[in-house]
Figure 1 (cartoon, helix red, strand yellow):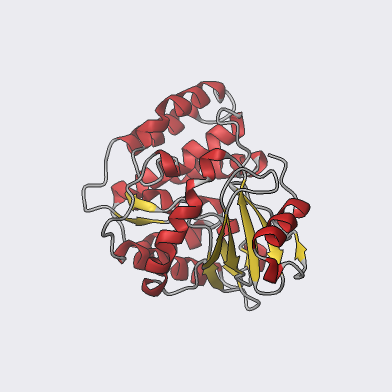
Figure 2: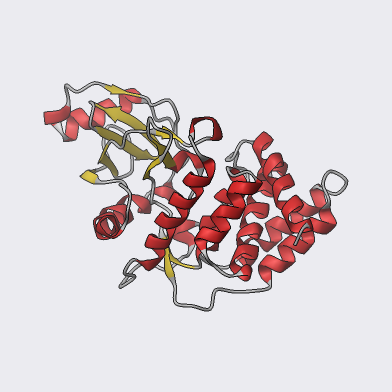
Length: 293
């Protein structure tokens, strides 16, 4: 969909005229599910980029105020709900701006401290009240649900990767991930614990977690994929210890990381997030770790 600053400005002027004179500009890093624009110094405008992301707007409106008081770090705050207009067909929203830079190894002061802090946040999220919360499903691309939904994609990617990676080990990783399920009560999951959704302050510490469009209740394994996306061996070990979940959950997390990296690297899923080059790095980390198990 053709979404740009001019469209965002037109929507704000039409529906929230009190904010029409505020500067509106594109941030340094743009999202995948939504297009985000900075509105003044304290707000942002987020526009779903496709029909399958639209439900996230109302879901965040319903659940962010419930989750925020139960969590140790700031999360998004939806300030206003917009409606279709100016040729844009979906509901959209205005949020409070959360300061900080997207996380990456160069901007994090202490990767192991960051891993512990993130584990603490995810632990608090898992402990949050789940009354009437939405179960994992199509609305969040089955994050928190069963990996078996993506078995055909994974098998297709494995065939395409023959001779390019150690597919024997990759199949063992995948089969191990499918070999167990979450048997405890469903818990809250973020659904997209990725570098762009973890903000870092000027001191290099984790300062906020954003973009809860994929949140649901279910199996927390999908929220651990960051262990292979961002952390080195030492930080991954610290993260695993601090998360304090069983070996089967870690194996399913490894499966989530493998699946995403494989389908991006091969183009099976049609997505480019993470970038294909980084997907190959993640594949190597996943396979290397499994060989030591």
